[in-house]
Length: 145
Length: 145
Length: 145
Length: 145
Image (tube, rainbow over all chains, first blue to last red; front, side, top):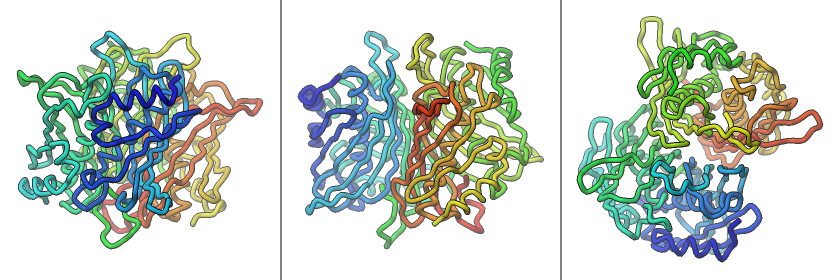
């Protein structure tokens, strides 16, 4: 439905993803991974990576996993995210999403976001669940991403 | 629990919020508003403002509303967001959050995000619901923002 | 899109709603209310009304509010609920839902559930946010209620 | 933190769970399963099992998985659920929850609900994500189940 090269092209066409430096590092079967280098300008006042960065990763990784079932022309309808541990020290964030179910027009995916430290150990920092839908072209009432 | 000047100081201490250009434009009673100028580097591949920007606004506005009930030393535990219309044309985004309930250690808030056009008309583009908790100092198992 | 009498007919056609004793007590404009008498067989081990009863009320009230925008032939796609206070002492539960946005095929609604005591005072015990969609007839991949 | 027999005792102490006929069929390691026989009084107007029954199962299974990390004296703070397929034909519903993360006072779990048909085949009908917290005894502002 969406191959790795096409997936990278989509990400490169997102100015916001370029600003954050997100990379698509896996897209096959029912799994998609986004990776993001830790940078100090992504933090909040306690020095943690901002929840908004984690929710960006969840939103985008969930959409990629959904595209594995629905194809590329979709929009994410919504998602929920739970933060489970501080995302502070580490080298990069990985958002690993898996397609849970794809129907004809709607797909549900879940995602775990981990902080990867310099020595390669991983710690889950957030988990998310979201829904994407085939895009309604030519209507002004479409749900959106 | 958190006055407007202190709220602005917190936002200014968040490098990610400075990068996005978010401004705290209301914080009183049970209501908090974050405002963000529309910029092209915040968009995704269809030209819409990226869902990750909207989820950043939801996360942060929900936290401010919770702080009105719990005080400033809190972390957002999680939230859900539903996108309801494309966030494409307009001058600025406003995230209006309201405190729904505050207990001793946990608060729940909801938020509507609107696109404000050049002539001042507003259109709701997303709605969110989230939970914040008083921060557990000195523990490594604390939930986080 | 759905009038009060038609709404009551739908509720009466739901065996599970009859078992719980839910009543549709408002359906007009953008608002729907379900009311449920407190009964001891709806409680959990601490004596609180079971979260599953509150989530039933959220699910169903959100669907009614969505039907005010989309018409009766819809299914709820999903929702999130936050419990904010114990639902213990009181006469009845009221789930007040309001339509936030309706597009052509999808609607988003939010809901507050309150415990009403014998003297008529109300206390919010839960809040919810959910999405409903026009039902896909004749397909086996439709989302469902 | 909570063994199988203690888990069954808790379920038996929930009048609402007894009314629905839920059985605890697994509780070990990081996994909990609730099983519910399909009955016609659990349906809605299209003949599907009511979303409120599925959300009851999610709420309760998520709480059991959280208890595997936090112990028995907890309350579920909230959850989100996505319905992915109609729950219509089948013998029983199974809600399989897994503990994602447990801190000192908060745990996050996810859950898949499947319809099991007469020949034993399974179909996922819903997926959920939720948070539970250690119960605040002796306060009136505690979050609740």
